[in-house]
Length: 240
Image (tube, rainbow, N blue to C red; front, side):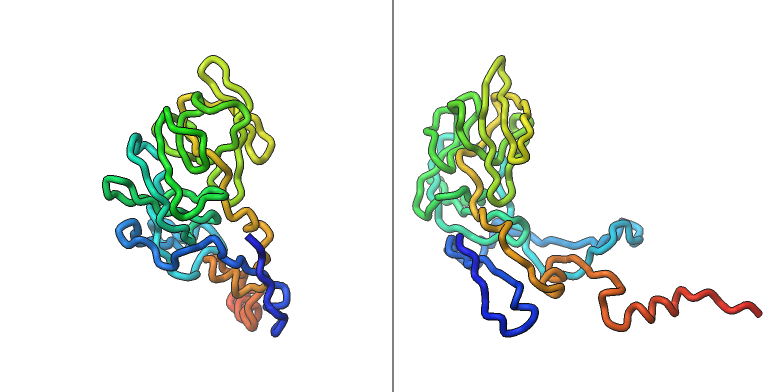
């Protein structure tokens, strides 16, 4: 996925870069797989601020992602590749043979029209999900479970790739993107391939306003005129 760099028509656009979304094939999400997403603004249940620098941002819809991949024996067809504002990776909409629709994380080299399956006996193809015990050593995977049936928790960000290094006594050794070697049970499921949108790490935000649209509030001193107002508000009262 190449990075698009606009013409420097303003100071903010001079340092900004954008993804070209060449892999995305649909602009609107599947309505039956979305739900509302409320924001905390960094406040707890009492309304008190417990996490600083949170608030604002563009309104989002949450896409329900199938991290478990337990629909065995039913083939699915990739209907579209979509953008998800809640994560760095793209998502793929699957149409199963029985009529059900689900979202999964879109691995690299997955194309619209591909046939995917899940289960212990499926082939080692990109997008298929099966237990680590059924995979050959050296397989690159993502969306790896830590406990069988709990759903994938490792390797879900854009460009993430986990390699199966060894299998011994019912355990599998994985090499994480950080280089850490981790043991998980061999009957945990994972999806073949690495996560797509690997150039996400090369995108430069370029300006504070674009950062603010990601629910990240700037400090008071960064806003014009706010520092003087804040200083006056905190000034101690003069002695009588």
